[in-house]
Length: 596
Image (tube, rainbow, N blue to C red; front, side, top):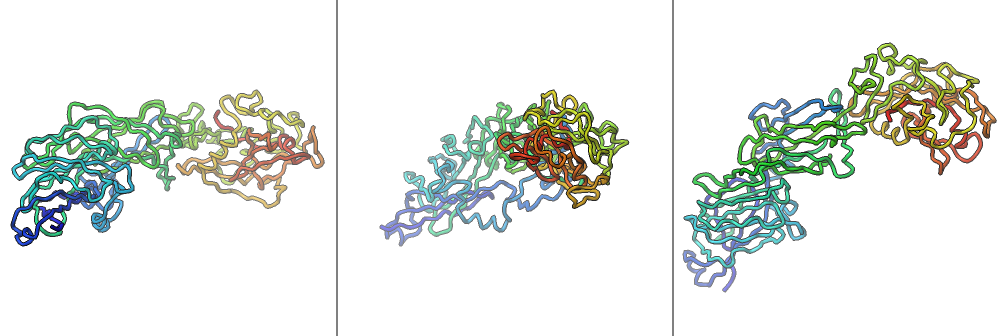
């Protein structure tokens, strides 16, 4: 006796990809001489092949439309609205194929262990195959494991060559077996599935039926195409930068931890699938168990979720982001944010994959109450960048009215430079008109304690509710902006006393209409030879050459103070003398206050 490959010939195949059956049997020499004789097969071998959502099956190659016409499956549906401090954009579109249709066709010939498992995949899915006679009589069922290539099933089932059979295959994409199939006639078989959660690992119902499969000699395998019965939606946070007038988006504060949480409405936790009902194949219906489901871990990388659409072809629902789940810097949503999930205007289609990109941006100009303003309004005194609210003027500027004294004017002017402040000193020791011998009554030649500019310190020079920024906050400003120089700078490190034109412009990467302009004011230096406390004042240095924007951060371990110098954080201080950390505390610098 010798082994031969027995072949399935499909007389009717559904058009979606996923499993390959190869039948084998043991025949005698007499059988070889009589190919028409019915013989008993001793099992069916399974070799798994990739599965796809309908996007590829329908050859949707790209997504180009941005207008969202009803019935056009390639449309991108945009929702743009304002909620609290946030401009919110939600872009829903069909998921583009990862590879071209030609490459996809080629991939169908190869085992796709990355989706369905394989020898090295310990998390391979389980699936059930059910066998029926031509009249629908139930014969048996077995569980397959995607981690076992060429797994033989139905070895104990009396399947015979030159006979036709029908095979039903289904899976939930889980590493545990799906519920067993009913043992009724195929035309009456209905499988009930409970406890759907929306996870790809236990709720992705896939189904295939191959009718009138003839077991005969030959080598042509039978493709068994699993069809996704539910809808996949991949939700992500868009953190792209602005392009022209199109705003960008920020990652949420939860990006570095658990990610955001969304609540899907109108979610069917149960369903039933009728294997065959006349001409209807694999019909799915929702049950009365309509509930909500939670999507966790929404980040910039994307989180996929399976929606049981209840068999409707135009499913609509919402995703709700609870209060305080959207946080950028110090901006947060006080009220829940509800986003529609309505497909191409008429609903999501079962068996399709979608992407939902959520974009959040709170960069704007505001007044003292946090009300959004245009940049030229008289009370638009603050710019919010990355969720941090900055004053638009240096501390000490007298005319703080954007309608009369534009803080972003080119070139900069003396009236935008403001005062110079010693670390820990509440009052300015010099102003924009100062040049040489700037000393005034606020001068303090003795360095202040390290925490003198903490937010709650009585020495805080900023107005109530605002403070001197920390080094970390200055770094956040740099990370969230692009920088450029305006006006005329000088290479002379002593600066030019009467040159007030130079400034650094910090434009939001996420909203190019929002910026801060910080004059290059130099610093109020010590007199030459003043090497120990009490230090003595000297001249203004570095105007139009060196930006010295102060921070509240003093590192006691290194005895250095942190300041912003245009596009980098610099550290000044050391051991002794005029360059020491103590001396650097006494030098006067510009301050740009930030909300505490």
